[in-house]
Image 1 (cartoon, one colour):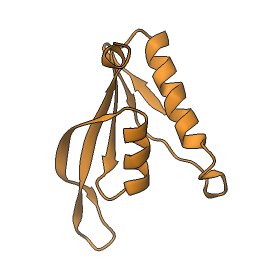
Image 2 (spheres, rainbow, N blue to C red):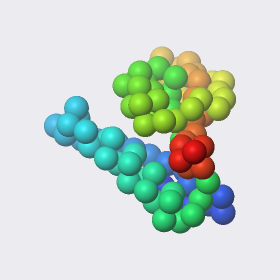
Image 3 (cartoon, rainbow, N blue to C red):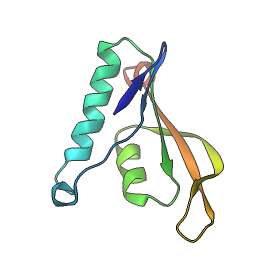
Length: 97
């Protein structure tokens, strides 16, 4: 699911059913969002991800996303604590230079 703004597109949620994981589906979804960015003539693709989500972080880094910042204590954890959200972006202009 994406949200389209005047300059950016944000990936609101990206989820793959357990039986389809490790088959490149998430990478295809990210590529589709990147293609949509070009179609909509927007500059950046934005997302946020739990700091502990190593598989998602690896995917986003492989797809060219850069770390922009951190929202401390953004996500609740099952034990009642809080976890940071990492803010990431992919810049269509920078990727094509």
